[in-house]
Image (cartoon, rainbow, N blue to C red):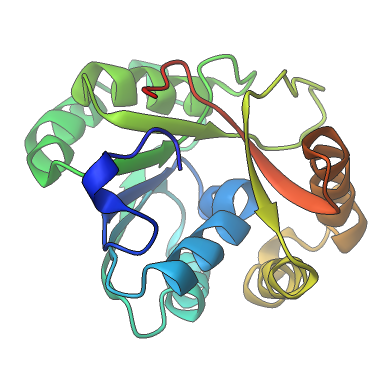
Amino acid sequence: MFGLPPDAGRTAPLHVLALGAHSDDIEIGAGGTLRRLLGERPQTRVSWVVLSGSPARAGEARASAAAILDGTDATVRTESFRDGFFPHQQDLKAFFREVLQPLQPDLVLTHRRADAHQDHRTVAELTWQTFRGARIAAYEIPKWDGDLGLPNAYITLDAEVVERKIGGLLEHFPSQADKPWFDADTFQGLMRVRGVEAGVRYAEAFTCSKLVW
């Protein structure tokens, strides 16, 4: 996956850093991939970092992460950077340098640099500044802006993983239920479209600016 080192094989444990600007971003963009990865590599260690959110939203994020990471060697952090103001928060860059850089993960799951949301773009830019030479896979978030791009990497998902991903999103993020786009049709529809592109039923898609073969 994503140009991982040859000695990792298909089952060796990894250290994965999952980054989300907001409390449901990781699950929307890479929830299925993480479930599949942890099923195939059960000894994998995960650093799960959500960078903004009210106390209530942080609670949702922790509950959702716990459901996905059940039994996994994992650390979950929920930070309180100001939602919508990421480009103007210098302490965010310090957090990446001082807290995240020492983690030295094998794989970083993060936002796309072409994402229309300013918080997402900032996280993506800081990811590339912080983890030079790392294996970085950028997930996608559907939204009103219509900024879905042309991904170049796909992770195929079976129907059970798709069902668990959608069920988890609807269960653990009740604060988002009033958003017209936050529903099972949106999540399943995007995974179905990406599945069509990948020649399978369902998939999650990523942008990998650099792949090492």
